[in-house]
Image (cartoon, rainbow, N blue to C red; front, side, top):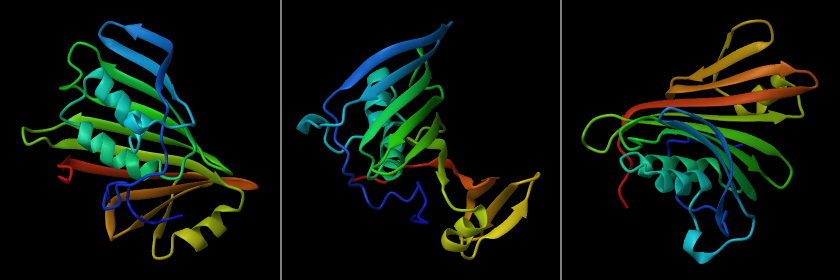
Length: 200
């Protein structure tokens, strides 16, 4: 797996294309907050080419200031996925000035993963504070995952079978390995404050 950050948006292209975005289930509605589950089809149409499902959904519910952040970060995260479903939470009354929360289920040819993205407007320059987490698993041990993927990272034990890895080259990135023998749960977490997306 690549060691590049989700926030490294130098490669904008992805191979996922969707035929449509379908609203499937209204999960809960409490006051002005809404959680909604959406799904995307596997076969694409030109109008949605290159747009991750979570980015398309953010625009649909009225996210503007943080739309480019959601779009650019999710492009990197969903690369090579063959199917995506997404769960959203946002403020129905003021979606563009309040936090946007999402959890995307990713299906690849031989594996699955979850990608969580939170975007919060911060400042008047189109900046956003973002939290991105990718959750996946490996069939090998956590020691093997660390050996192959985390060269140069410093391990910091937490509780029991949980170890957090950090690196000075990405000070706001952590990789947490949870030993679930015979497998390993992998949580990649990255934070950026007042991030202004690159302009095309």
